[in-house]
Image 1 (tube, helix red, strand yellow):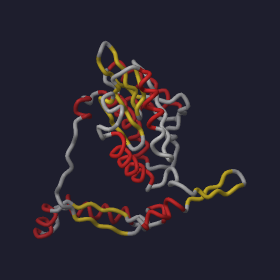
Image 2: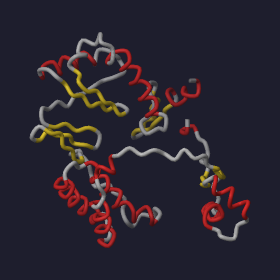
Image 3: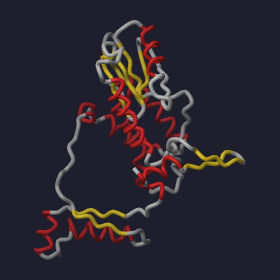
Image 4: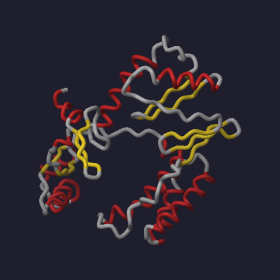
Length: 268
């Protein structure tokens, strides 16, 4: 816990001409913030929400949380939701909850969840204040990243939209956004078709990680890092001229190369 003290007590920021010292909590965007929020909210749930002594325990039919965003399915009059919101805001002086309540649809993370004909349907939720902040195609990011960005965005829509019709509608909007950020049609159209051809059930299916032990090559960054990575990967997987002993080694151990990040206070 001593390592966490600087992240929670030594946050400074400047606004206009004034320098401020944040005396409580951690700064937004820091590496430590999500872990702290999860730990704090877990303890809060354990003390107040999950016990049957919770006066609204029977009203809560579903409670799902991602960091500090919560989705609740509520059984009871709408007035009881207001009572619950008021009650939950009296439990911890450092937490403040706001509620978006509806009988038909609610936003949760990047999803809009709706009830249509007695069934739950979803699509991608965009805030009214959202701007088109997609990476410009002329950016000096790696070309592979820029070329693959449209596919990843279309695939997100394919995963979020429970109907093909909603996917098609939001895909048209995404195409316009990509064009406004100067992405060429030769990249947009194949990315759209590739994402559309994915089955949503497969995208939502849970996957298991390969538990095979890997030998990792870690080094500090140099201008030759990418060359070293390619050499290691080649010797480990594809080089037909390697010795039999080396071949056996790399058959048993898949090899990957990583570049070690230099540690800073933000790392903690």
